[in-house]
Image (tube, rainbow, N blue to C red):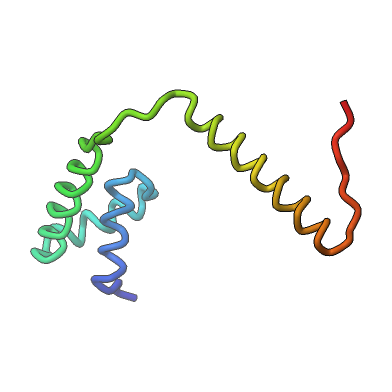
Length: 97
């Protein structure tokens, strides 16, 4: 059964991402030989993907940012969980040192 252009568009992205099997790659290459629409789509996707890969973050984040955010989130959750438990009358479990 012939594939639709939608299927080939998906395959083009998978080709760029190197996620096609050799059979799928051969099938796509055969189609690309005769399809100007998909040839243009391939060029567009290549250009877009290259631009994204070249893009750099505008700001540098501190190396310890992830750890600080996770610590804050844990403390926030603990505080709000305890508050909710106290409001509902549930027992609050405090860590033992």
